[in-house]
Amino acid sequence: MPTRPRLEIIASTSAILVLKLFLISLDICVAHASDSITSNQSLSGDQKLFSVGGNFVLGFFTKDESSSKFYIGIWYKKVSELTPVWVANRATPVSDITKSLLHISPDGNLALLDQSKSLIWSTNTTIPSNSSTVAVLQDNGNLVLRDADNSANIFWQSFDNPTHINLPGSKSIFNKVTKVSKRLISWKNSQDPAPGLFSSGLQENNQSVLLWNMSKPYWTSGPWNGRTFSKEVPVRSSATMVNVTCDANSEEFYCSFNLNNNSRSHVILDFVMDVTGQLKAVLWEESTQRWNPFFAVPEAQCDVTALCGPFGRLHERKSPSSHGASRVFDQQVTNSLGFE
Image (cartoon, rainbow, N blue to C red):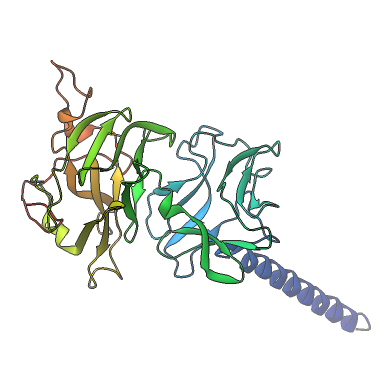
């Protein structure tokens, strides 16, 4: 009997210690569940950024589990299939994420260092010496590098530097002064995000063009007439969820797309320059847990330059795709996407 109080005290102390350790670990998890990188908070290993509304994640990823090639990217949080929508170091992977670091560099840029602390990627923009910066992952999938004290002062954003995907709210732009087009460039293959052979963008005569090897056009939309593009495009009825807007002036021609008001809260959709050479609009269908295209150009994959050859024949249902297997599309034609 004399030892019982001592045992109760030991048990009580152990319980308190376990509770403290649990609270400390909870604090660590909460600290890492941030939407931003500051001069005092970097990202490495399995750490991630989460947009405030829970739509997007930023962190290290790989599409090939057998390799040691890792990339900094942004992907959907609510999609079960890992689908990167933007990649920072798409041609220069790192091999050890525990020793690699995404941080705010001394000059204010967002920068990625590899395991040897060599610079792999940077936003590489001019920032005033008296500015303090922060990188924020927004809930629309846009990664923004801005002034820490003034959120309206944006120095760089991923929407202006896309890789292979345009998200709702982003713009495709052709600058008529500099003759530069903001292009989407396909992945090298479904596992490798390095720049591939196919690209899409706008050009000077107010039309959209797909290029092979950044030089040879193999599809054009026809000119924008202020309301539509001239070329007919096969799409599914799902396209009624999307509004496409284009405009031109003396300095630029741009197009953007947004989801209709009734679709914004529950629809996951993007435009992707696919590894098949097709520009696609794809919709995530929760019931089937797969990406389904409702728009694709060229309609026939053999219309993609050098894909089939003069005697080739491609089985379109099985061609590899960055958004799952490519499928044959419905033949319904509608002007909901701005085509007629």
